[in-house]
Amino acid sequence: MDFEEQALGAKLDVGVSFGTKPAAQTPARICPVTLPEEIDPFVSNGLETALGEEWLSILDGAVDIARQKHQIQELFDWEITDGTAFAKFASGMLKWVPTENASAKVTYDVICLFYFVFDQSSDIVYQTKIDTASINQDGSVKITPLSKWMVDFAQKIGEFMDSPDSLTVESFQTFAGSPLYHLEQAEIPDEGFKTFNELFARKLKEGMRPVSCPDDDRVIVYPADSTFDGAWPVDNGTVSIKGLDWPISALLENSDHADSFDGGIWMHAFLNTFDYHRQHAPVSGTVVEAKNIMGLAYLNVIPETIDGETHLRPHRNFNKYGDDDLDAPDDPGYQFLQLRGSVVIQNDILGYVAVLPIGMAQVSSVVLNEAIVPSSDNPRPTVKKGDEISHFEFGGSDIVLVFQAAAKPLILGANSGVNGQKYLVGEPLGVAGLGA
Image 1: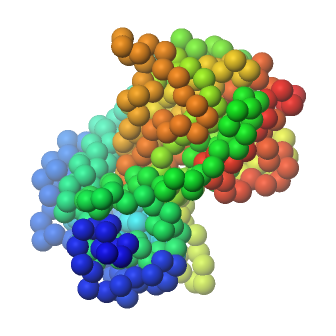
Image 2: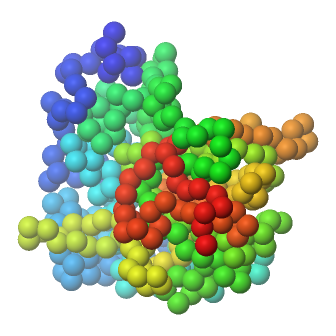
């Protein structure tokens, strides 16, 4: 049985070799989401509750801005002409069978279009503002009815991605033929992938992610396959992003250990849809806290014109110029408001290290490894550097690390002009004791 047959437990009509374009692929000009004849009640009822009786007119205005002002190509290619068509598009996403192309852009295009339309001026006012004022006294997030519906929408899509209907032989072929997914590295269950989330949250073959200096606690490694975005100081318990002081206590939702990070370092990296989506311990030590934190399911999307056509891309990076200036997204600080996990590890050399897998858009599910969650049976579980601690299900996502001041970590690349560099799990991230 070849790889593709094993992966789905079924004989493929067309063979696919990794790194090549699949024989059958969703054309870029055809909508990857099947639009139903009617708007799903989950969409119509939910948006009426969130936006009022004029919800369809509000969507009309948002689509019109995206088409006329921004000239977003997908809206024309996919024949999304008004609010009704967009509501049907959202309805189709509830039963969406994802497919990909050789450039690994199809999944992103669908997600980006959904969030971009909701970010237009006619309905952005109904969403929770990405601002420190959206944080409650207890560290929780003030979620508006529309933002709450968007969380529910993402979770409902996630439920479908857990069903066998979310993955077919034909759709799997498109991922197998998309080189950036590197499915040749995947560990395939004996029974094959049964759902899209199983494919998305795939494990890797043994030895695919060797851990650097596993016995040297001074060496910190990357917890995820991710693109490094930079590291910034924690001053007076906050991280300053584009003039706003975001409190670490809110990021950790009033953890008992939040004050320990004052004077330390906050770093950010982001994952793409095609990346390996399991997270691993960046250091060895004792897990003193592991929890999920409720929040938003948000994605900042910006238009980008290439060769005369305007398409969409997520904007999640803070490109650093000089010491203090950030070329930030329109809504920086979203990491403090998103659905996320929080794992705090105590290490003899580094002290406390906080690892936060941040859910993005349709990635509203951060699944913690039960073995690392403190419990009455095991109140102080231990992890070794490189042990799996959590995974995401479906979509893009972020990873945040926070270090104590006493660790004095030298974050490799933080000030050397290599922001945007892609790293793999287990590769060196930094060294304790060498920083300022």
